[in-house]
Image (cartoon, rainbow, N blue to C red):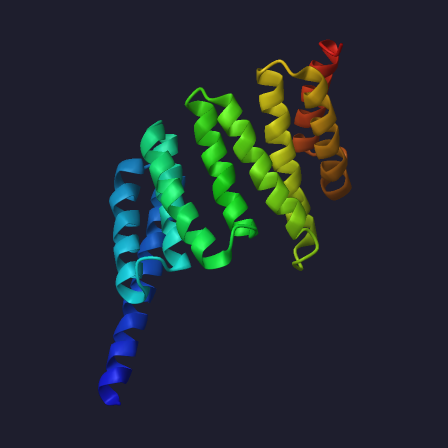
Length: 206
């Protein structure tokens, strides 16, 4: 019994160490010190896996940060691999229709876009949007959920502009605008950015 308690306590200590190390990595990342952040996040992943196993959802939090770091360093292929690893774990743990899955899909879509594959990005953004829409009203963070949907709509609209699908872009961006205005008001920068993109789409509207 005491041995089990000691093992449980040791597991908790490793887990807490992983959380602390992860937070240090976030500080480095926000400061733009990617070279210091990268090994710190990897150490956080090692600690979390030692405490709870390879596929614990807490591991994906650090994996996503590694993916963001690699994305910022323009190592897009490596970022895609890390995001896909996090995605597989979250689908296994939460199912394929969970907002936490949609968050990773959004990251993956951004990588596809930066790698010059707007159609793959568009398809992945749409997949994330469908999950987010299904999840609306299922949590107490209604406004935040709405903004997540609006952000994804905005991303889809932006890619539609890039591939010169101006009519579709305007429709999607108008949907994003309605949500943004309802939550943020008319004077928020995100609203102004969306309005600017709608004006651009209107200039080419058939």
